Image (cartoon, rainbow, N blue to C red; front, side, top):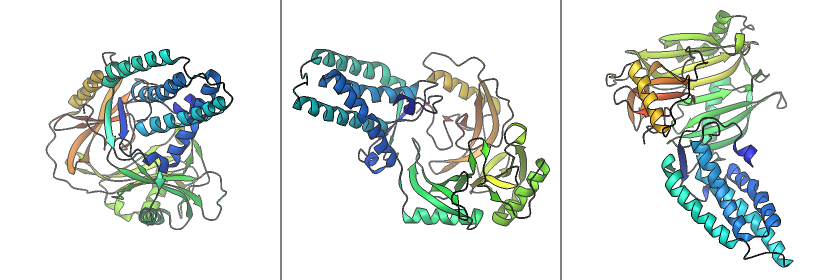
Length: 415
């Protein structure tokens, strides 16, 4: 359980999501797996101890402690979600109930054993939770957080987006609706297989923002290895350098997203050490020194295929309030915000802040100019690839108010 729980963990964001829909995880694959994962925990705990009350305290306290750790402890941070705790607790209770029934039938259940210790532990945990743990995290309230089957309208939207990007080369695997965690948005996530060879090595993963359909992201890579799933660019040869990769990306852009020809700028940069995964070309628009929301990023691998695609639709001109913060003040705002959230522990040695772009972001229906500030550990180079809204090492600073946000969609850090 602990191995699965903390797999892929990293920095903690100090937030926990409270899902108001208690029945939602029962309708999702992830929720049911979370329940099943802790059934053995309760089952074997009861068989080992034969003491119902201590086991009950344990199967309730452990998932809550895990979620708190994910939300608060750097290095073990993941998404702190009330639905995960809910299903983990129910799974543990279910397993314990089955074992208790089996033990009771055989007359081996010790009903009163450990009752006093369990009550004392419960009281202590309640006090620790209310006095110590509660002030260390902030709560975000949402209506749902898990995967569910996509509706017909979402499937149709995904099919149209993929057809524009790649024609009819691919077929779909599963298509799911996935609410964003802690922010007001939803993504339709899907998988792709080659139509001519569904058994081909690798596969493609994609997301389409919903319901605005403004952002499409598709990845044809398996970890750090190029796969045979990439989309071949008509007339393009395997590139050997940045110039040839740009020419291939330009061919693809002209055939599938010709509106990018009107972009104000483009840049091509290598992906991986010595460009072993190819090169990405990005087309962007800028208005009065502010990057506009519209963008196109195309990654071409060493075989001359599209291996990643990121399409962002949006305006190319906006009337924005003039920025009042420069890059240095944006960096200082992030530093001060992170220091305040550290609970007096201070910032790690060598941490660096680099405000590298000013970008237009829509929050609560209003467009704002915000600084993108990359936070690095000192060993990471200051140079950066074009920004993406969900990069975990980037914070967003309102160039007028100075509010610091965890993402392009998330709430202010102080809220």
